[in-house]
Length: 221
Image (cartoon, rainbow, N blue to C red):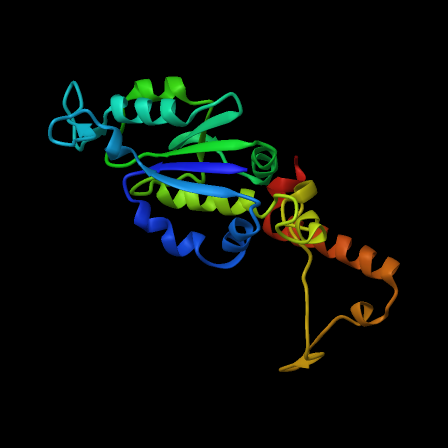
C-alpha cells in the first residue's frame, strides 16, 4: 500500500511514523508513506495557499489550486482521495478494513478556517474522526494511517486484529497477565483452566457484557 498525505506541516508526522508498528510496516515494505507539503504546488507569487473567504467572515480558507495540482500529480487509477473534514462520514473499524484493501490512499489535511468548497469535487470520500474540531487534518491523518496500516497482511498477528474491539459490533474482552494475584485482584479461574472451549465462551460472554455496559449502541447494530 502507498499512502500520500497532503499537509502544510509534515514535521508533525515524523515521530508518529518513525516508531512502533508503522515503522516496522515501512521497514518490511508493507506500506510506503509520503508526506507532501502542498505549499510547494502553489502558483501564488507570495507562496500563499490560503486567502480570505468570499462574502466575509473570520479566518483564512485554503485555495483550490495548490491542492488540485498536488492531487493531479499523485493520482492514478488505483487512488482513493480522502478529504479529512469535521463534516465527513464518521471513521470506524469497518472503514479501516475497507481502506486497508486499497492500493493507494491520498489523505488531504485541511487547516485554518476551512477549504474552498470546490476541493470536494476531486475527493472520493470525506472522513471525520469525531464530532469535534481540531486545528487541522494532521491528527486525523495519523489516526487513520495507524488504524489502516496495522490491518495490512503481515503487519501484526492476524489473531490480534480479528479480536479487536468493534469487530462484530462488540468491544474486546478483558485480558490478564502475570502475576496471578495483584493487590487482592485475581485472574479469573477459567483462564487458568487450559480448557480452550470454556475460555472462548468466557471471552465472548465478557465481550458482550462489556459492550452492554459501555457501548450499548453497538449492540443495536
